[in-house]
Length: 368
Image 1 (tube, rainbow, N blue to C red):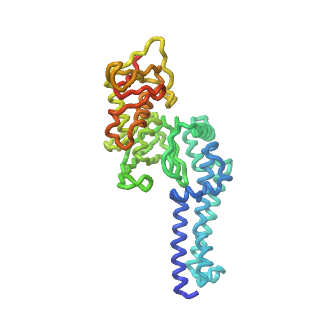
Image 2: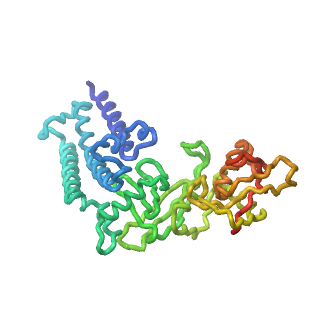
Image 3: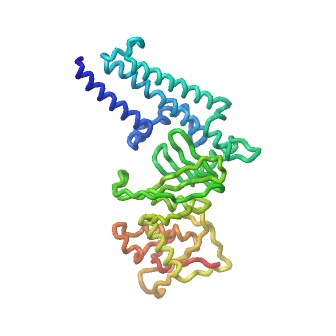
């Protein structure tokens, strides 16, 4: 092999290995879909995230750090075969800069291995995530008790999750968490201040091929030992996040938040229903939980008020209250022409239970 050919191959190998290292550190969607991630390759060691969320991320961060520390040495070992004229087979014959590079590469692996071993002692009690959990315990509590509480809440189906692989935002009934490559930020909902700090707008999203707005929210705990962090999410998910949070999000900078088409309609739907006549609930009728979301109490009743009882296309509904205002609005929107949102408010929909036709003017709030 000539010197020019080896130089070209050296440059190609360097660029290729650099690209491989970057996508392994921050894998794109395509790599995640193909299973080329640390947690997929070490699935048997890491266990189930659903069953043991905290221990899963403790092991994941430790394994990720250890694997990433091997990348410099991996580059050197591959270079031995790609560039034989470098004579990288026997240490005394290495060029001085390759001797320094190999020494540093080995030193990084030794240091990281020692750190990971130290973390793993006492059943991972010395891991940074375990220490972070220790700051969230009561005076007589243990970090494992906090971990158990988080594991239980993570298994619930109603948690909020957002974000790409490796940088997820997770909100449960009591906790706000953000995963990252080497750490897991955790804060208790009762102890935090949330502030909308910044907005980013992009004309084109690679996922939806439309414009998108991202919001950055700072999470600061009143416990000074807990590390503050930032969460980033699509503005279309902002409403779902607020519903899961127990406290408000301060918008001191008056950032304008773009709403989805559905959210805009639900807001207009809610305003119109507030203008409609109320329905006074009879004494012999009870309101159960909404059968749509099973979380809120049924608070609307369909009563034909848009026209005379025998006139028009709308029909009197005789169903008992079974839906909340939000679920009724979502149902109404789903029955409209999705290509013409400008006529949704004037449209009609079948009752989700008995299929009686109604319009927005027929939706009445329940008054007890």
